[in-house]
Image (cartoon, rainbow, N blue to C red; front, side):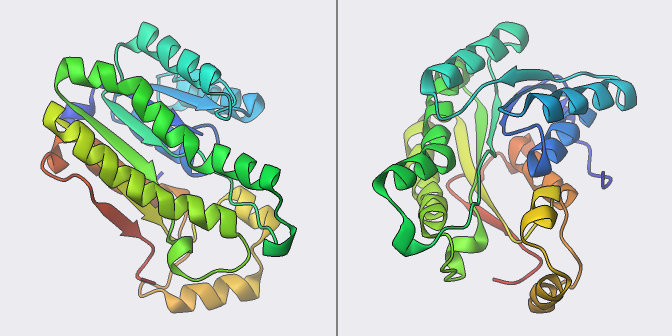
Length: 255
């Protein structure tokens, strides 16, 4: 982990993270645990998630609550949110992180593939926000952080359904900010650039491709999952209390 600022208001705050068991999500889970937050996360990968919980219990002295659910199943998502609330109280910070950036050829996309892609990359963000909204309204405070991506801004042609979903996250963020702002709830988005996670390394990173991409960044260093933690903590904390309906780009200066 990269050392990050301490936000006293995050200590003891109930935080819910989707896709929190690996990649960027695991870094976010660790970041909030180390702030002293009561962290619950939803993930479909039980093995990676349990390993993360074991490591954080050992290294940070606090074990997050892992909730095994497929976010494509909205009833299961709602049940997971309810289970987190039963353990920790209403989530006052929701991080909608879960996504799959599978590559796909435009001409090979079927209606079923399109719907399945949106069911992972866009639909759960709305229903997770819906599920936590009542608890945040009761407390007259809350922060929802939706993860989008700079990929839809780069005219990439090899994942059109994914980039459509990520563009949709911006519209969702602004719409939710308008709906929930009168209740003291803030809604913002984070747009990471190319963050080199284990999944990226296994599937798409080549030395040549990575070097070429880093050359496009103003800050010419490889981005890793820990680089996204600080911006997310800031948006979850009272330090950003008058910031809503915004998208924070964290990409080393490509855009």
